[in-house]
Image 1 (cartoon, rainbow, N blue to C red):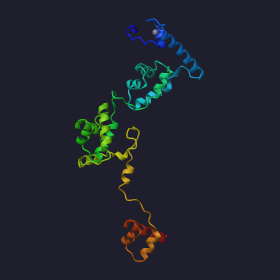
Image 2: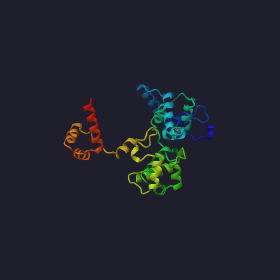
Image 3: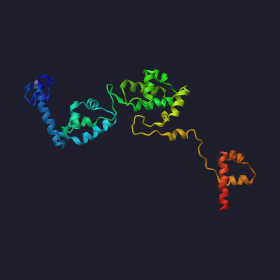
Image 4: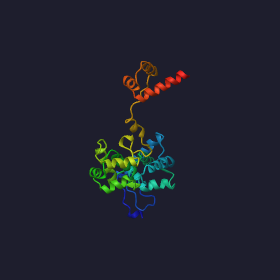
Length: 273
Ligand SMILES: [Zn+2]
């Protein structure tokens, strides 16, 4: 079966040595000889630096599990780390307990949720973006036009119909989101739907791609609330004695009438005690 495999190029140590099963002979051309000598020196240097040639499998398995939890497949992780699919799957199945150091470092350098254009992605990122756009009044037709997608796709994704979406959908939704998320749309239907279903607007997310993030509804509500003013109970009592109404006192102190009434109650309770 190795006979059908492509030979490694000249100028590599593998071409110099040949395969373990001797199915093709090692090459002794100048380039291959030099490559073999260079590889030997690199190994000697690594040894002097105290870097063993093999990296233990356990931390790699841990890292790959984290990457997988972010929605990446083994094939995608292998593409990102520029290693063979088998390198990843053998590690995960426990068939290999260690890995060549350079490959291991490349695997460890792969970041979670680093999707390329041929990988499906978890849908939650597109779902959050679409729901945020509904929240501020964009309807599926507007969003679909900006995303270069079908309106029915937009609506299916927003409704949480899919667990994963293809790259084109996710990228389209990202494009629409960056275009529309700062401007309110005219669709009251979309707004009502988002509000009725408890969806969140763009401001609720710090990092909309973080699967562990909880939407911050606190900040959204507070902006609609009047800032809390602490009322000077003494002043209220003084102005009340001067015969002013709660409304007049409120205007004078710059607070709500209700706060004045509350402050009066507090003063009375203090007086009673
Ligand atoms: Zn050669």
